[in-house]
Image (cartoon, rainbow, N blue to C red):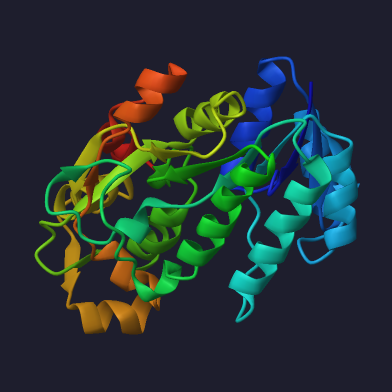
Length: 290
């Protein structure tokens, strides 16, 4: 079975390509540069040169595949427009032959007020509000014979990469103190990159129209995450609490998402797809030396 993936040279993408190849899939991967092409080739995938704005390339590559995983994201003022056009091109190319797996994210649920699942009300921060319309359009294609599925990862960690590295680890190492927001009692819904990669592979066999929250039920207060990161960068106990306004000035719009209090469960994916996350000690992972 051949799978075409966008974002294959990215953080989650690399782990997903590895997971696909371990499971015996033939993988083609979108690559917008020679560096990206080399990256996916090293993993065992065949590069397809182009970007997310090249809808003709996306349609053709999906047309030669038996399944598609869309992990790539275009960054800019036109993020929503590019993502919408790309997803529709991929769906058009794939048709009804296989499953199209679209990437969402749990931030669209806003503050959850306890542990919730995929049926929780949607209340996204400004940063991810654009996702709601696009995901609705993607899922609507199920009524026309396509097989769309949406995977909504939590905050991904592991292998010393990702947003935690960018916004907590690196500043902590460079400045000698790890940034936190408020009193740190808000929870982050975490998932290890290798676990969520395995969920993407399983989602290729999911029923059309399905939505899966990709979290490993590690709903950890930000204060404990910051403490673990501080230990990992050799600055145990050195944490600077920022107000939301200060965090937005330092981090940009993502601070609003980091300030959310989110607790979610991935029980649906475990029950319906047999997903079994095994990396369940985020604090130990984050406390390792970086």
